[in-house]
Image 1 (tube, one colour):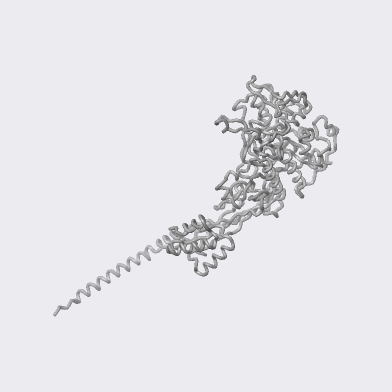
Image 2 (cartoon, helix red, strand yellow):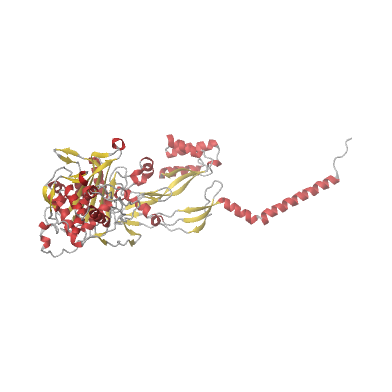
Length: 627
């Protein structure tokens, strides 16, 4: 018979051991719950809490009327998931179902399946989900066929107005766009980011096991402020018309690009500003992937050699120095030898016109005469160079105009006090070679010549919220007495030369301006030695149009970049010349309803005003002038 294995002592020992262990556990538990309870709670909160910035509603952008929306923000759905809470098979089934709802196939479908296979607890599967797809996904979630999937609101910037060409939105270069992080890029969107974006709401938000925000768990640390709306100086109708004209010119001239700006010469308001090719602000990601250079605005962010339009500033310098008058006679020899015979400048046609008055040399754009005028500004080449350079910089070349968009560049203007100019440098500068500017700088400089001599600051924002933006003070850069002479010189360009008159004048309006044709250097030609491109030029026309003689209402600057000219019967021809493009844009602008203020009272005519032969006053009313 086996002996008994139980023992009172053993039982007592086991009981005591259990009591000791239980007491130890109780003490340990009490330690963690009582002594360290607060610390553990804080640690738990820390591990499940994240500081989140919730963007405010971005301000809208309107045209000058305040009725046409150029940019606004809407909430679109973002599709998210918690894949780590699902088995591999369920993940694949969910991804397949989502691809069916979203209509994805190929690489897009494979990418969604890959994201669902992620080992991350929270992934974004798709952005900007369409309304129909969102509705289908919500129904599937409600039925339980899409576990661990959710739709979250996400603000999105949209540009509702179609541009003047295919795949473009209105004023795309001027506006810029907003990236996924809510930051403005380029143009007005970047320049006014702080105003439009407002201030985000900062919260401490709790996340669940799937890393999704838990509703009503937020602790607001900083209350945000909504963005402020902007009202621009741009007229939407005029902007669209100009974009259509630029598209037509770009196609007809087989140009790299075509640009234009319409400016109020008295206030600096930009009524329209465009370039084609343009882009769609709603599809900026595709452009960024294929052609990011398209985002650059050539009107303010790209420089070029403008050519003969700068002869007007050479005229300003000479008139101020008293070395010429409009009727001063020069001998146009067709070519001019410089720097001891080592350099030479030629007229574009390689011909001379003989004896010619200065005003006609400007009208017929004679390079040789412009070079002679520049060389005679001072007693020496150095003095003459300093005078011309000072005139350029006084009128804003080589410095930013101050326009309120992102990315403006200053241009390239060599200072003769740093690097001495030779005669060829001075001569080339006299007709706009060897200096690089933007179309906006040219528009501002010409405005100063014709508005009575003051430099305006261009701007595109008319009001921030309900507050009108004050006009920046104007700076006098030209003796007001010389402004009528500059008007007369520009008007003579389009009334004296038959070739310009037939394609530039606008019946019933006062018109003037200056053409520019500049060669383009190709640094890659001749195995890196460089050469001028053949029959490819930059074409410009900067001019004014007014409802009354002597009073220009608008400045219009156009540039046709790298267009090819064709020589027919000894004369260069193009489908659309820069001055023809000017006429079309100027005509549309001057006739845009509600754009221009009422005309100031007409001054009492003086004797000198009626003497057009001197060139010192505005031309009398005639062909192309307002009655």
